[in-house]
Image 1 (cartoon, rainbow, N blue to C red):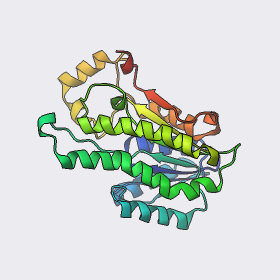
Image 2 (image 1 turned 135 degrees about the vertical axis):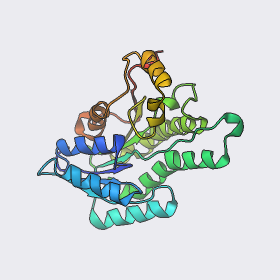
Image 3 (image 1 turned 180 degrees about the vertical axis):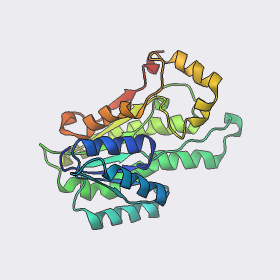
Length: 255
């Protein structure tokens, strides 16, 4: 990871922030974190920049939910960097509603941010990803999927699981299409992690305890649990991996 330039969407908190932290610890030169909330993004950048004298965390706020926002972000990044080595498509959202009442807006919002945005952001950043990529030092795209895209249960919302299954397939398609450009594309499919998105479940003691009993390792994931897989895929340790979907789920798929 030494001297690599990294970009993480949804990087101001949760899993995105955890991945930014481990990249900096591993020697990344610059890690750009982007999110809609400017103040939160800047606070994260300031906090993480203090972790190491070598690397820097840079806030580059943006709204990844629209085509204009994606193009604007890519333009701003291109003005700052001649290449990037790692892109983590982490920004995502969910929508809970009974299937009989599930609204079109909930379907579109989830599918747009969870599937459409990763594709078009990757597309816009291809010139930067290709610029410094070689056969011995390739670029890496990491998509954040979910075990919800593998399991048949729709407990996290019918559109959420569908969107994550789509991002897994998009990962495979892009891995095939971009291999000749020395760009590896992989995905991490987390199970339950402590995050803002899952806070409502955590606050429901009955449901939370039931999940803990059901997961073979009897706990939810912590920030540290995402760091290892992310570092593997971002660094040369994973140089022979592309098109993979790595589950980090405490064994829930065994149930």
